Image (tube, rainbow, N blue to C red; front, side, top):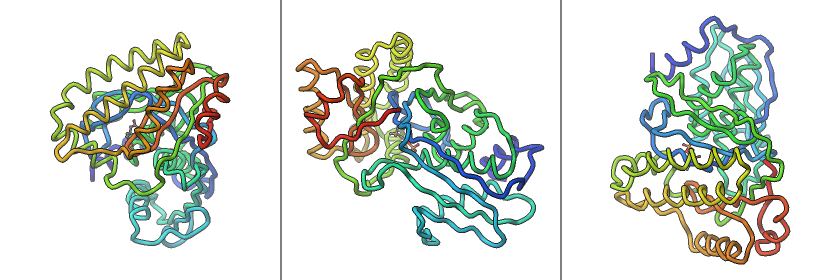
Length: 328
Ligand code: PMV
């Protein structure tokens, strides 16, 4: 048994297989405010640090899952996914962890409500929606932390995509990762907004997985990262508790830049920014200097995500007309 299989068999002990034959689920994408950057275990996607995210509400993944005779079949936006493609192989490897005793195949019909042209990753919401669908089809009735562990086996940040709002992923300490799962914060903040700014929708040259591993292995700047995350996480949780937007936004922006600094220290360096990324960062900082409370964060790519409050939407949209506004 692989270590992933061992983890799945621990969680699914005594669970039934193949109860309802089909299910339809939805999971929102999420954007980290305090980033997950670095694995302590690559097999199980176990992180070195905790992280904290905000969901993208209506932007995420829909999954229709059914059991069928014969092999698996996968569809994205109604079109068959080519056998042997990276996407199909990743999906099949994940579903291989969940083969029941009766030899059924899975039919997966996935749809992303994130505009596919926008260049925002949908693997987190995709794996979260798939895990919820597997749970429903088989009638496992797993508790949310267990579903979060299963989603993490598909993609680390997927463990944070099972809920709307603010979500904290606890790194955990166990070797089998059963205590490494996310938890939603019991916080209502209806005025909180996320803005999406697309710089490039193209495929990135280096995956987050590879960039993360290279940074941990070769960047002298990585040594400072875990302590920085511990401080930022405490700052952000306290700021959320007080609804202190400036403290949260400022810390999130600094955290993202610090993550990119660790990548710049890697050998060879990882630089995701394009000229327009930097132009937009400056624009956000200029808006702030002019009195508009808006902050940015960035992940393993050139696009920006803005953080602001509902009351400032018009002022920001006037300066950045291409921004898509999301209610988390
Ligand atoms: O879960 P992955 O392997 O796609 O990695 C996500 C990494 C970042 O998006 C850069 C940070 C995060 O916490 O989501």
